[in-house]
Structure formats: structure tokens, C-alpha cells
Length: 343
Image (cartoon, rainbow, N blue to C red; front, side, top):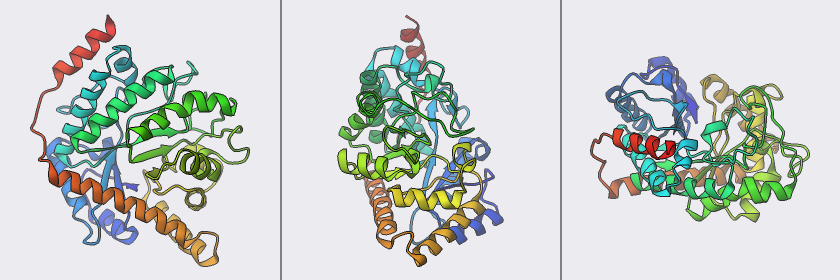
């Protein structure tokens, strides 16, 4: 899954995408000029390949993680929603977010953050977390997941196995969480386990090192965490997507190409390269070479492709069964959140 540079699909980008043939596109503020233009872009992306329909995604959490301007509703951050104490409100926010995103053709929302804010000095997560209480994060996370899914948008919980206890920002460098396996299991992993109970179809990994879980590798390239913990112990069979592989936590310590190979070997299915399509093409070529020399197995790549295809097919089937939502003004919902949270 790659990012594109413009709000329209220029010839150079179209050519690069046709060379790469990715599974999906992630959009940012640079791709947004208005809802009508965004809808046109999504339609064009969906129809780019005859072999498969691209999945179009963005980060739409509310608060400071908000890629689209009005008339899209700017919802308060997750922490403010958690402060209302109303799980029903979280569900309504997920439903509203999904309704607006689906109207323009967005398939995936990289939300909610299921991180538990155990370190108050953690600015990269901060108010993106619903709470410092894992039970509250699980309750509100499940509700928002349910709302997004029922609106026809795929939710993606992040950042597995939890980014809330770190200090360093993974956009800058590689953080480390030194808590015990027991602490991580009872606090950070708990909301993700609950999200599995909600049937979440996609999870995003954290670019964080957890020595109690893996002495050598961060979660994104850790077979002990992705395959051992998430797949085998937690019995998760949905799509695992990496966080952006152009972040400092990755590029300060390795190359994007090598990290893609390592992440695939660890059990991840979809690789996120948010800004440079040429890097994704180089990583694809490195994967082909790794397949030839045996450092990456065909079975592992096929398994990843099957999971992504299954997600795409179930998503398309669900959309075909339900009509697109009508336009609605959610200003009163935002006012309700702010009023209850303040009280």
C-alpha cells in the first residue's frame, strides 16, 4: 500500500502504480482539495486495474489525526470521547466517520488507536488513546470498530501490541518498551484481544521494540510477536499491515526494502510505504530476488495475498448489500461529545 503525491492521478504516478501494481493506496492531506474531487480520485483508483480493485485508505481518528477538511466532520480526539463515559457515543462516532468516508469511496480507516496511554509523557499517542485504562480502551475501541464496520468501512486497530507505554516517537527513531511480558499482556495486548472478539479484519503493527517479547526485533519484523503471539496464541487470521516503513524507527536502522522482506517473513501481510512509490518498487524487486534465493518463501507471500484478497472480497460483498449512506450533518454529535466530556 503506497501514497501518491497529488490530489489527482497524474501520468507519472499512474505509470509508477501500473509498474508496482499495489494492493492499496493511502491518502493524506496532500491528496485532498474537497469531497467531490476526492470521490473522483477514489473512483479512478478503484478502476485503475482490471485484475483487482485497489483498497483506498487514510488515517481518520479525529483530533490531530485528521486528513480531510470541512465539510467532513472534525471529531474530537479519542481521549475526549473516552471521557464522556458513553460507549454508545463512541459507536455513533464510528458510524458517522464511516458514513462520511464511504460516501467518497474510502475503503479503510486506520482507526481506532487501541493503545493504552500508560506513559503520560507519550506525545505520539497522547490524546489519540481512549484512556489509560485497558478496559476502557477495549470498550470504546470495540464500539468505534463496530460503527465503522456497520457503515461499510474497514476499521484497522493500531499499533499492535501497544504503543502507549513508550516515550520516543517512532516517527523519529525506534522506541523501546521495557515492561514485563505480564504487564504487556494484561494492559497493552488486552484491547487488541477484545478487538479480535469484535471480529476486526485488520491490525497495524507498532515500530517498537519489546525486549520481554523479542530481545532482537521490533514488532513490525518480529515473528515472535506477529506469528507467535498474534497468530498462534491469539488465533488472529486477519490482515496485518505495517505502520509506515518510511518512519525514522525503520530508516534509521535499516532500508525499506530489507524491512519489507523481514516483515513478510515475520508474518505481516501488507506493507505501508506512504510517501515514495519508487521505494516501494525497489522493495518489490528485493522481494522477488529474495524469493529466488530462498530468503523469502512463496508460501508466505501467497498466504499474505490470500488474506488481502479475502478482505477485499468480503468488503465488496458488504458494500453491494447496503446502499451508500445519505449526507448528514454531524455537528450536533460533536457538540454532544464536547458537552458531556466537559461535564
